[in-house]
Amino acid sequence: MVTNINAETLKRLADEVGDETVVILLNVFSDELDQYLQKLSDQPSVTQIGDISHAIKSSAASFGADDLALMAQECEYRVRQGQETWMIDHLPQFRQMVEGMSIEYKQLAGSNELINRML
Figure 1 (spheres, rainbow, N blue to C red):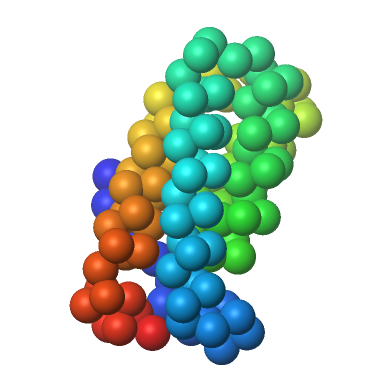
Figure 2 (cartoon, rainbow, N blue to C red):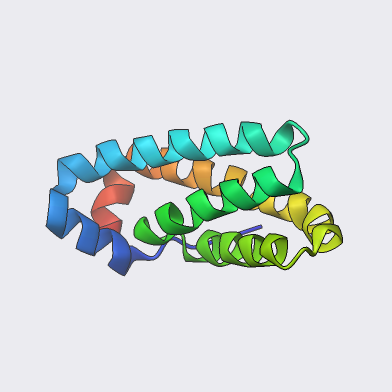
């Protein structure tokens, strides 16, 4: 699954906190995604998935992971609506998105060339 990082969102963040701090924050975000991925891989309850989705939703939007933010929002909504079957069916896709974005943000944070292109 290919996702895109919203460069405009990252530029705004860099303007607010500075380029060096953005790199630190990208690493923190990536580490958070790894932690959420671990929780999502440990056979979480539907309630736990809803809690994780809620946490990811805001962070992902703040870092320009728009597709992940939308998926997290959808997961959170479905859990609140009691649509457990939908959530269980879509959990592999959600995990894959979390993992993919974690990798992308790690790569971005580790490459000055990629950072410079984004910012």
